[in-house]
Image (cartoon, rainbow, N blue to C red; front, side, top):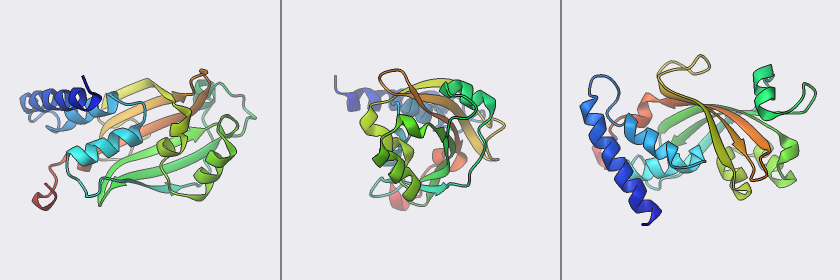
Length: 193
């Protein structure tokens, strides 16, 4: 069965489940969770979500990046398998599709485990991290997934994830904290549907 058919069926089932949870969680939240669970890249999952939900045409994910340095907590360094002196990169991004901000994410990454071209792109552009590192064929190890706001997330967060991204050789390349906005699961305007 084609991946698109499987994902489409997963979204349909999740949408039906969402109607039974009315009043508890946003109706589209289970479908967003299923979309995110089906991919190692949140960027790719959000692009698919944007297209299926008709949030913008074209369904392109943009990252507004803030590169203001932020020290990595010891737990981040431990999850990445690096010592206290190892250089880490940091990006705080808001991923959007059209005018809809879908997520607010913090990303600590290990530059030594990326290519020089990837590091240059991350330092000089607003290209989403998942797009930049896609050639590494990374996998995602989800550490935390919870409905609602984790401590690191802003108000209005409906879904929070913490994950480590790994290269195929097992080396950790990034720890991300992803905070999905209420706007990501709201019904799009009729003009976009």
